[in-house]
Length: 452
Image (cartoon, rainbow, N blue to C red; front, side, top):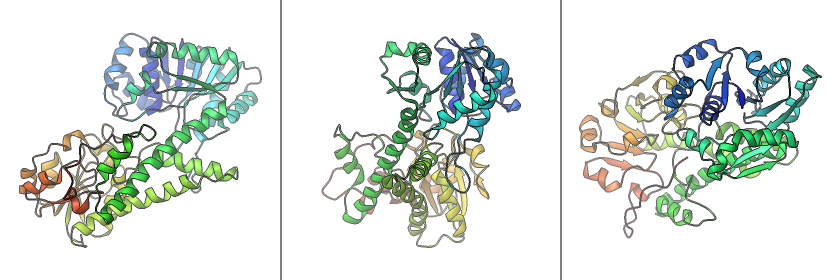
């Protein structure tokens, strides 16, 4: 099938490349000419493990191309995906649908035959209706259907998620559109991926509901971590104890500095605003948003407390800047709030991240970026692990101790067994473990459960 993917950002690039890898003919469209030139040259705008090789392979096979010419791409397409950004709108928190509406109008003008227009962007309930109206008003003669097909891609594991999804949700109101979508995803039927065929508005809400639920799960275990510290319990053991219950599950039960990224913050806020507009407030989600915002600031306060209550004039080393490992995405990363709060308290910051430094430079100021974790620790009064990159899981703790000016390690991801850190002569603070160590009558907690 012939597919046009409008938007060559994270969702559009991953989705378009995977469709091409299935054997479809895909053209990704973007208004940024420099981005398109870079993609044609094999230079990707994002970091996603394995994506560069997949893009190169499908370009060589002639199944994947890139262009700024939307009209030409749409004219020959069986399906046109809208995969543009829907950031939080300044001032009120609603999803900003400017790019979606612009894409709809441009697609409408380019339609020449029956085409399925697919909302892949994360959009509030009713956006499919708006897209349909825009297309009809722009091109009354157009023959088309509008479908909702939300993405459920985890950054760092997006290719696997696309090719072996937990489910494929398709909101389509007519049989013709349903058949086109079945044909597009037919290669996944061999993997027996569940296909959820539903109404358009239901599909739109499903995406927001899924992200809100996971965000609440992260926030729940973070609150349990705080309680564990007060009562002398171990949050890792609590997480394991409840995660083995199949009704709960182990994923997203790793205590830390709060959620960030391109989805949870804006999607939870957009769901709150949508619910308020319809007079059906979602109090659990509202509370989740507030708790998570406070969580990041509280992590900075935790670092300050570990430094004796004052970081003025002190150098703090930060390991991990991106909101999660295996991505260069800095959007709403906890590190941003933590670093800003520490700088406001008078600290100077050194930082290291395996992939996120260039993106971090766009949102952080007055940070000294180091070449590796040990250079980052050199001369610092405390070392703080913010993102749990694999490269941080087996550091030479004795070497870190020798580099630090003061022997303080604040582990916001509970990567290390406390006794290993103590053995290296470091003072250790973690999250949700009593006094940074296991209970006296308990074995050391097992490896942390999966993290978002």
